[in-house]
Length: 287
View 1 (cartoon, rainbow, N blue to C red):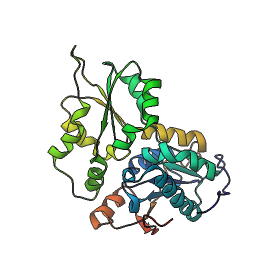
View 2: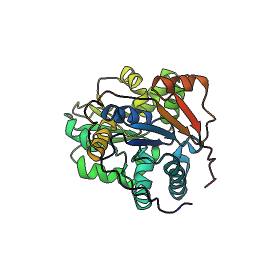
View 3: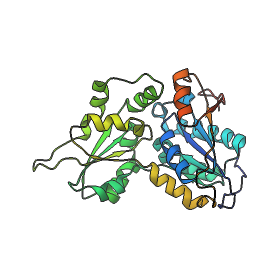
View 4: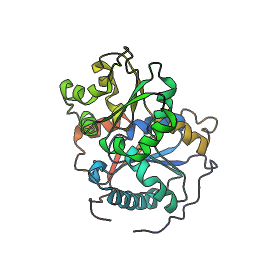
């Protein structure tokens, strides 16, 4: 495993920074979209550790080792000015170790409990996440800090990330299976107050947002953390230079496995301007 990277910290001085957006799979595309709106002038690499997807099957020590090893290679290859860890699992577990290893700025994803607590009127909110994020101490501390006055329903959806991947690959699951995953988000208190805010605490989930909205038993506010991540990137790198506010180029996709790169998926990626795709082969277990 490589030692500490020596890439200098980005300060916003680079007029055309390179931003690397990293996820276990395709969920980080939702974050990439928002970050790219904030800095359309930047060069982008979208990196998916699909060889290890889903991260929920790895124990914590193995996950830390895996992400550090993959990031070592990605940083060496692409030399980004900033890295976005567009994965709740990796952000909550690996960011401290990543910050010890690399000197470049790293932006993680936080379950959007605080904005949900600020937005709710019924004081009933739900956190829709992977089972690992629901169980994590970090998540419960966020709830205690920001939503202690709310009734918070924790919904650990075991299949939604995979459903989102299937959606992009052109093989969507039926409504009944999707509805079963989100149904626990919707509850009514004894005095008639309904859940009115749902936190999307996995970056894969906004890929399915239109279907969530159609299947919900009543309208709710769905909170996506991606816009907040984009604002943080702008704070760190600055706004686009004058005249570059609308410039946007193609995006390089880097996959560690590539087994699921079907033609329908490549077409979906191209629609998001990921027009060049490379496989940086790194099988699970190879550090």
